[in-house]
Length: 108
Image (tube, rainbow, N blue to C red; front, top):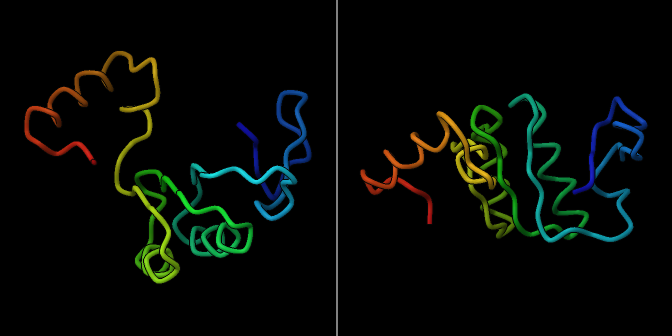
């Protein structure tokens, strides 16, 4: 995992990149946790960096960002909370995931 934040130089002693395009070893995917007004810019950076898979955290998506991602052919998960899927899934998130599985609403 590589931290990216335009307002930080380090995070818990680890280098923090300001943009996705600054990362030398390009990741295959990125988890986007931004304000929805900033997400379209992050999607542009992902495209420029050659990142093809995005998880846009629930509440971070915008219509413009999702449209750009679709137009660029990115694989995107949006509208879902990563904490329901990042192992180990605990507490409320485990219950929420179970309910969604029961209802057939888990993303594929």
